[in-house]
Amino acid sequence: MKIHSSALRPDPRRWLALVVICFGQLMIVLDSTIVNVALPSIQRDLRFTPAELTWVVNAYLITYGSLLLLAGRAGDLIGRKKVFLAGVVLFTAASVLSGFAQNSAELVIARFVQGAGGALSAGVILALIVTGFPKPAERAQAMSVFTFVIAGGGSIGLLAGGLLTEWINWHWIFFINLPIGIATFAAGAALIDETASIGLGKGVDVWGSVLVTGATVLGIYAIVTAADYGWASAHTVGFVAAAIGLLVAFFVLESRLENPILPFRVLRLRSLVGASAARTMLATGMFATFFLGALYLQHVKGYSAFGTGLAFLPATIATGLLSLGISARLMRTFGPRALLIPGLITITTALVLLATSDQHAAYFPTIFGGYLLFGIGGGMSFMPLMTIMMAEVPAADAGIASGVANVTMQVGAAFGLAALGTVSADHAKTLTAQGHSVLSALTSGYQLGFSIAAACVAVGLLIVIIVLRSPAQARPRQQVTTAEAEREQAEAA
Image 1 (cartoon, helix red, strand yellow):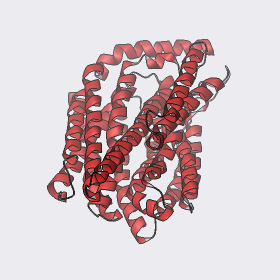
Image 2 (cartoon, helix red, strand yellow):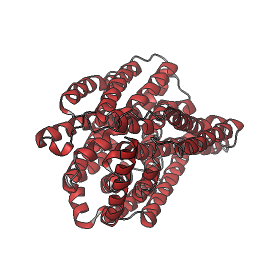
Image 3 (cartoon, helix red, strand yellow):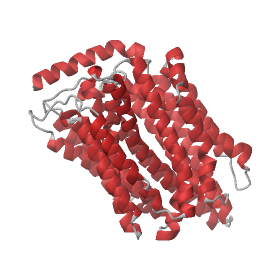
Image 4 (cartoon, one colour):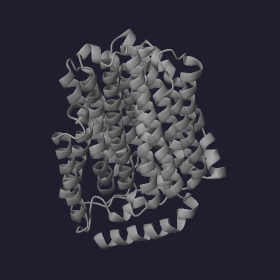
């Protein structure tokens, strides 16, 4: 087994590797924001119904959320560089297939494959950063760069999505990933050093991988199809029950294995579990904001695709500016938790403000103010959450911890998008049947969605207040957990 210590790598090479890793994340962020802006055009061109349209997003979320845990553990076992580069290749190829899609079925299938590629890359990105930058000060700087790329990618995606959709067609929003993917793979192969891996000598938890992936697939599928079949239908309840059954079987199996895909010691990390739960609530609000916001701006306010991208810019620019070292400095001064709490309060306020926007609302100050506050809150929340989440995780388990954090976020996003999309559409249908105008009904539906999203973020705030501690308080526990991990690995070897 070949081991490279991140601490021994030359600093310039390490920071160049971070840039490459961030470009892998950039593709994923670009895809998310570009697709949101182009949804109305895709709907018209491929004749998606309103209920079917969510599959453009949810097809991606199903495989993305289902494979994150497996990707994270695969990185621990065989090396995170291998998994990251494999994800880049698959994501890039699926992006090209999405661009060539000529009907709804082809696009949805390509999005399923694209989600798998995204999971492989994203499942190890946080682990690569954590192990590559073990010192707290350097890690904070690396996280700043990572958060800035997410925000900057969001801004680029919003504008590029609007421009490409209006000036050429929506197919080109997927082709933009091709040059980025090729460059990322080439640079990653040259600059990223392979991380220490546990190895496959003691065997791979194949059945555990099958059970947890199957449980996640069935669970997310039940969530995203609930809009079509109803939350209390036999279809939804049956798939949820099957997912729970597989999950129970998974935990029983994991408790009996020496080298499980999910070591139970990871679930004893209070910071990881608590921050993941809070991130899940935040993801629900975040995905709802952009999905419902794009539909509101184009269907109610009559904005063009490019105009929608411009309207979202206050959110992404504010997050990006705070990520340029400002949030890192505030965390060093006050601590991650002290920054996170006002950040989530700001996001909740932003969503409440957006929930007041009707068909007569002007962009200034209501809509602009809502997205500006959302961006400020996001800039104050994303980095502290990631910092707290990984603070207690030993380096050997960074991959699986990254997978746990990401899978909970994506499941929350899928659930939130399906639930809020269903509630919003049903409310609009009810009002239309009662004689309200289409615009008035749509607006009320979107307002209800924003209100529920605000409540979800408020729940995340409560989790932070009640459950989470600062990394300084968690340090003694980290030392114990690291010793635990090393002992278990020694026994497995």
